[in-house]
Amino acid sequence: MNPSDEPRSSGARVEPAFGQAAGAPAAAAPAWGANLEQLAQDMLRERRAERRWRIFFRLLWLLLALVVITVLLSSPVRNATKSAPHTALIEVRGEIAADTEASAENLVAALKSAFDDQGAQAVVLRINSPGGSPVQAGIVNDEIQRLKKLHDKPVYAVVEEMCASGAYYIAVAADEIYVDKASLVGSIGVLMDGFGFTGTMEKLGVERRLLTAGENKGMLDPFSPQNEQHKAYAKAMIDQIHRQFIAVVKQGRGERLKETTDTFSGLFWNGEEAIKLGLADKTGNLDFVAREVVKAEEIVDYTPRENVAERLAKRFGAGVGAGAVKAMREFAPQMR
Image (cartoon, rainbow, N blue to C red; front, side):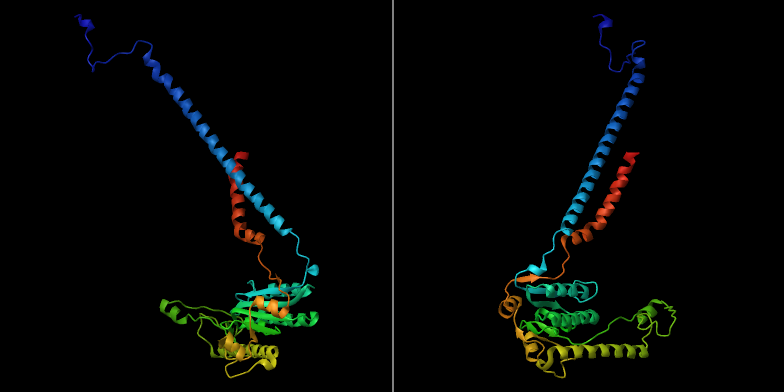
């Protein structure tokens, strides 16, 4: 065998041909760089496209929400003057306060609509409330009295679970009060509650620094020791409101009320006992009153309710606004 034909060992170095392989790495580098740059540009274009579509769909949902709200707000209102004979229903639910569904503003608006409707044969207040503000309850009571005289329509109160305190303040304006035998009725009283933190502050080493212009301006401050003079003043004030409450109950119930020492003590009773005490008249629910008492079985609800548009505005308003701002911020760099 010719020695030149023997296989070379695996460890032997093979020299590249002159003028050929020596320049190969230098030629490959620009090609790889161009490919990487092209890949980066493609990825950037894809990211921009995805962002544009995301912004598009966000704006589309915003537009759809605006269209829904516009349609709902522009929907025609029922013509109250041409309605058929019916029983007008107004719900009194939850706490009676200025910022609740059972506020005087909402209830008075509903009462006016119900009394103005020529088809409404009577107004029924369906009550399920623990009470609340004596001011709000007093406004509603006064308005019921005024509208009854103006329109000569009967008003009935139907109690479900509870008609206590301020809710009963409203109920006594009705011509009759219907209850379930297990309903809770009464609680004719007034309270003013709060907390005192002076002991806790002493233990924590916290000093109260209160400055007032007027010697009684800091009255009932929970972080200051209780002042007996201020306490007596507050007690006299709620006693006066209690007397106003009692007067309204006596006026509304008249001779039907069988007053005892507990009647105005703040106690409450079940429906069966409330009837015996003259705090209520009979047992019956809404359907019974509409069918058997008013003689107008169809019931139309006049209670102001939060419509879909308002719920959308409250639930999504802040979120949609924030989403729109975010979308505009994301889109802005692409417009430069």
